[in-house]
Length: 166
Image (cartoon, rainbow, N blue to C red; front, side, top):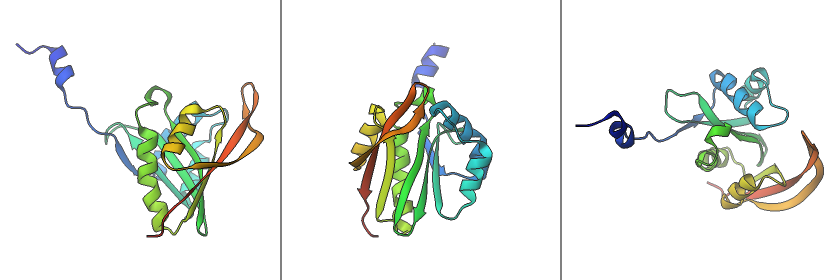
């Protein structure tokens, strides 16, 4: 006889869903950002950014009907772009959502003509540094006291990745 526990153990897990972010996602994105950073961005701020034609953003959902659990947002200027933020809801960190976001995000930036991609990451954020290094980013500088934290300030590592033309 099959038990409830057996069903849960064998129930197929759905793959996370990655898609372009829309203004309808902004409440979810604001909640994820607020849980991830000392000064989170509000839903109105995110909606304004998503209306800009120079902004590209993607989300990850645990399943198609779930709220956005993670997101990445970049701003393009000529043939360069900067990743402004990558955030994952704290209970879902370590599940590969950041890698999925970057993998979906880079082709859209390349199609937009981006050849050089930059970002800043807190110097003590080892999981983020590892994610970016695996994604091909290299450190190019350091900004002392760049981030405000609950403990004061933290340095930022500036990173770069060159993208191929498509």
